[in-house]
Amino acid sequence: MYTDETRTKVRTVFHSIRQQTKKPAGQYNMALSDFIAPSPIPDYIGSFAVTAGIGIDEWVKKFEKDHDDYSAIMLKAIADRLAEAFTELLHLRLRKEFWGYAKDEQLDESQLIKEEYKGIRPAPGYPAQPDHTEKPLIFSLLDVEKNTGITLTESMAMFPTAAVSGLYFAHPEAQYFGVGKIQKDQIADYASRKGMNLEETERWLGTVLAY
Image (cartoon, rainbow, N blue to C red):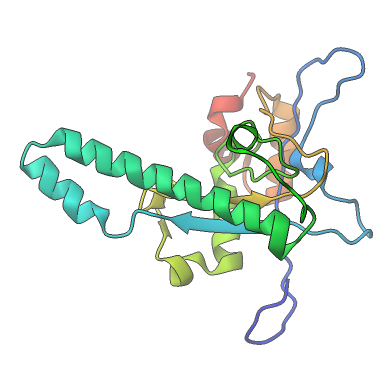
């Protein structure tokens, strides 16, 4: 990437984890890196961070102080849904305008819900990339805190909580999937590639360890 201020090239590396389950003949263990062309073929990956939760905490506290749990829960739920809707809108504009690889896309609501469009937008911490420590790369790349007000906690949770961040893949065969359980050999390799120690990596990926 190039920074706007200095036009200095900065190397940003995203890491992916590959499925290690035994698959039927003709099916393969996937990783997000499968949806990006191998070097030196030029290809693109996008990133995003959105929120619809700025300013709601004061109201949530007020509702909870008044023992109005229903309003507090509903406000947080609406903010979460609006954040997700924002990601849908950005992805639509990415496909039809910004990258324009699906300019003629005409999908109805049911098709959009079924994700019949081309491309995916996986997020760190979700099944295709369960590693939350990929979030700081997105935050650094987009200067998220300055541009959106979203911050990261030490546990890699986003604040406001009604926030979503992730990556854009435009490969026509890109699809959502779950990494599932992985073995220690991949954890060790992943830790080495990320420059993390094994114990730290196991802690962050504890939910997908197969040992």
